[in-house]
Amino acid sequence: MNQHQKLNYVEFPARDLLSTKSFFTQAFGWNFTDYGPDYTAFSDEGLDGGFFRSEQHSTTDSGSALLVFYSEHLEQTETNIRQSGGEIIKPIFPFPGGRRFHFTEPSGNEFAVWSDK
Image 1 (cartoon, one colour):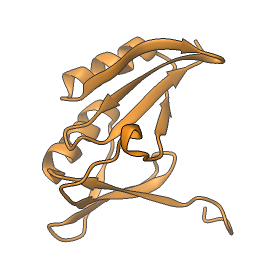
Image 2: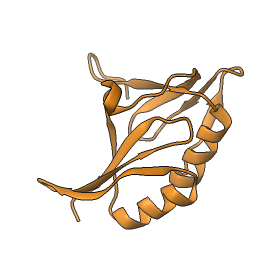
Image 3: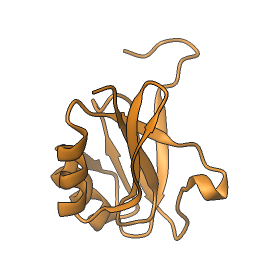
Image 4: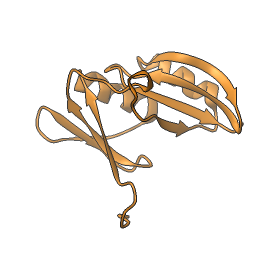
């Protein structure tokens, strides 16, 4: 449901839309709707959003915001990400409140996954 002045949508650059879509479909079970050859959207994943064709990518080293997934089974999610073509760039580490790791998807965008278990 759309809520006044609440975050509603996020967009990411993607060098390779097909590989990015394939990764998120395999690793997280996402579905996409294409809007022409240069844009694809996802919904019902905690936050709606999309990927637009670009040679840029989003990483914390370049000052980008970090979107963080939650997982009840951190190690299994890490395995799914590896098997789907993602790269673990920061292995599982503890932090106040739980454990997490960072990964990049095939277009180079950085995400993290955390668990309180």
